[in-house]
Image (cartoon, rainbow, N blue to C red):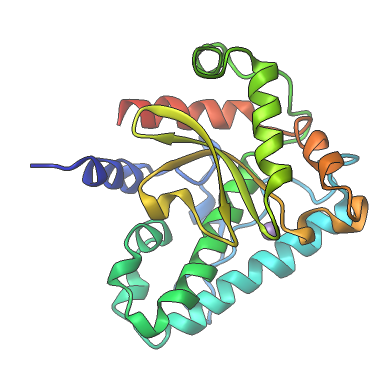
Length: 239
Ligand code: MN3
């Protein structure tokens, strides 16, 4: 018998465009890294595409340095465990218990960072924002009341995180929820499906917003790629 977790796992693993906008063959575009099995996917837009809400310098450093470091560290750690490193990164984070204990906390941080950032780039776009498409909008209204209430709750979760982490709109089974995770923990690690996430590590906003995290969170609504979020919602509700 298939458990709920197995079912989610199957859905994630059979989704070829889980980590790209529909029609974007990210995996094919990404250059295989000489240093290991995982590679840094290219940003799906120019570094200045999200200006003025997210500045080009932040995007460049965030993607080219921070995200790259998660990928490099993951490759380095897993070079000690070749049988583990053949897994897709989504499968890796969903099954951390399979990672040898001495490597697990390192893999949790770096694979989590890789998965979270890969999703994050696709969750934003140039000229994004506005309202979610109707099916998702209805689900949000059903769960939270109105879009404005959802926005308050999501912003609240993002601004309340102490230290580094992420706030998420996610699917827990078939239920929409707003939750946060510390560090680079991914909802996938506990069998939940991230739909929309915001990175509130200081590296995501410090150059432009300094200590004003709430201003960064407010600006984020102008770059949300709701089509991508709605696509994920539709797919995983069926799963
Ligand atoms: Mn980050």
